[in-house]
Length: 363
Image (cartoon, rainbow, N blue to C red):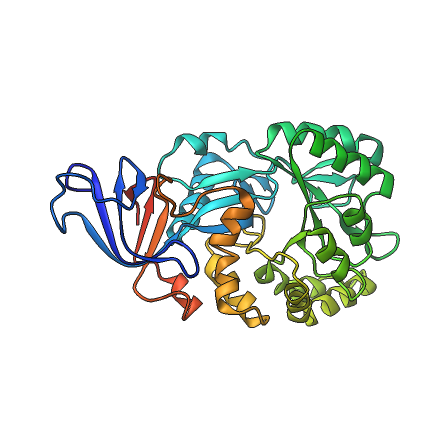
């Protein structure tokens, strides 16, 4: 910062997909489009193409491959997201208490979904509350109160007796759980790879589905009609063949995962064309590294989503969906500056020129 704590950002400020402005100022950590009185021209200037901070709408801060990680590792995860330009994170399930991150002005903002809620022995060890259907509503209500307006269920996982993906919950249990979350003012999302869990979840009132690789011609219209969003996490879906290669013990499951991978782009494109809201998420944490949001936008484009809409899925549309501001007058100054127009080439997102968080240049 310079000029008494005022930062001047000029070039092409993308307040919206078509709302392009010439400049903005950062004063006391907030955005204004009115020149502050007494400012010195060109003092504290950053120039380029300006976006609101990117959104990773599915990641896991405080989670490693074996479960919770310590604060040092959590900080490293958050810093990696920040340096990639992801300044708003929807944490889609973590066993760690990351509230201390909120006190750090130099780390991204996190919207938490509490801890995953899974069926007993039907998810990755040390990640989730593992419970039976009769307890689902109570646990969902508790996580709704602990989170930031979201709850995360594990909707399907491998059933070792069947040797394939299968729903984790009976219909009555998800109906009770989703109703409980909504009573607490929280939205519900669910991990779903397979086809068979989707209809019950959507008809029970779920708000979002993660991965959604099992969407079909029958369920795409249902999602569209109900306005249920998806976060495809295509950078994670890319790992399905690798997972399948280690599944010799469950050949039906391995073949199923390969089929879901093979039609992943077709699935996402069909969802988009039907009008289903699509947002960017990487599934970072656990097994994937953080900082992949630009790669996920590129994957959406590869799936056939127009670049402008793929960009919105990580920027303007995603922030609206999560109820967080962008580059509006008076909003917190969380923004990223690029050397070129990211609407023309989403690959630009991988090379931020500057990152400004809470009004301070942090990268």
